[in-house]
Length: 403
Image 1 (cartoon, rainbow, N blue to C red):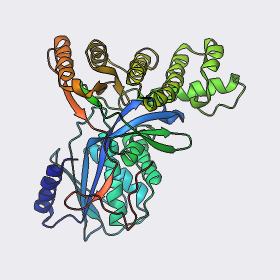
Image 2 (spheres, rainbow, N blue to C red; image 1 turned 60 degrees about the horizontal axis):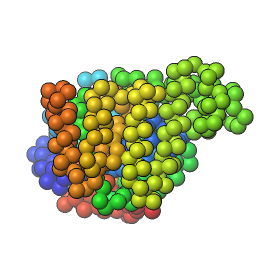
Image 3 (cartoon, rainbow, N blue to C red; image 1 turned 45 degrees about the horizontal axis):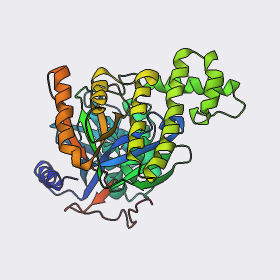
Image 4 (tube, rainbow, N blue to C red; image 1 turned 180 degrees about the horizontal axis):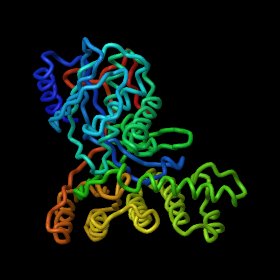
C-alpha cells in the first residue's frame, strides 16, 4: 500500500471536487500462485493479495449522478447512480458501473469519486478486481450496507460478466478481499472455504511483466470456459459418479475416458484436473517447507498451460524457460488468465536482485527490450481506511482476517 499515492489522491480529490473525500477504500491486486482456471471449475487455488492495488475515494453528492474520475488515466465519466448502464467510450468505468448496479437497489443521492492505483493494467495482476472491490467497500460505507465479503466478491464477478464481458470465476475478488500479510490464500471454489497459509520468510515472489497486454474480453478466455463446461458434460455422460464440474473428474477417469472425447476438450480437462492435484500437493509441500518441490509444481503448471490449455504465449514461455537455469529460483509460471501479462517467480530472498537482473537480460536477448521485474509481498486484503491510511471498521463491523 502506497500511502504517498493515497495522499496525492486525496489532494487531487479536493482540487477536483472542492471538498474532502469522506470515504477512503483500498483493494489489492493478486497473484495466482497455483491453480490456473480452476476457480470456475469449482476447484482449488493458491493465491496471494499483493502490496499494490487501487484506491477509491468518494463523498456523497447532492444530485442523483456519479462523477467518477480516473486519476491515472486523466479521464472522467458521469452516469446516474440508479441506472449506471454500460459505456463503450469509458470502458474502464464499467467495473464501477457494474458494482453499483449489483450493490445499490434504489440509491439517492449520487456520489463523487476518484480512483488511483499502482497496478499495471493488463499485467495479469487483476487490476479490474482491485477496482471492483475498492468500489464495493466504498459503497458499503456510503450507503450503510451490510458487510459480507462473499456477497461483495459475487457483485464484482457479476460486474465482470455483465458489464465487462469476461466470464471469470471468483478467484480475483476473493483473493483481494481475503488476503493476509505474509500468507497465501487457499480457496475451495465449490464450498468457498478459505484459509490462509504462511509463506516461508526466506522466499519472495517476483512478477515479470512482459508488457504483452491481454484483454480477457477480447482473448479466448471465454472460449476456454466453454471448453471446460463441454468437457465436464462429456465426462458426466461416461463416469460412474456425478460430475457437476471438472472438479469431480479424477485423473483415473481422464485416463479411462479421454480417448473417446474430442482431443481439444480432453486437453483442456487434463489441465484443470492436473491443476487441482497440483494445488493440493503444493499445499502439503508448503506446509512441509519443501520450496523445491513446490517450485517444481509451478513449472509443471506452466507446461500444462502451454500444451493443454494453450493460454500462454512466447514471451511468457521465454521467461519461464530462463528461470530454470537461474540460481536461487525455485519455480515459475504464468499468473492469471494468460494470453499475455506476467510470469510469477518463486525465489530465495537472498537471490532476488541477481535473479531479477538475469531475467531482464534473458528477455532482452530474445526481444530487444527488458521486461519489468518487481518484487511483490503477500499483503492484507481490501479495507476501508482512515484518511491517513489506517484500516478502520465498516459500519461498525471489524474487518476480520481469515485464519
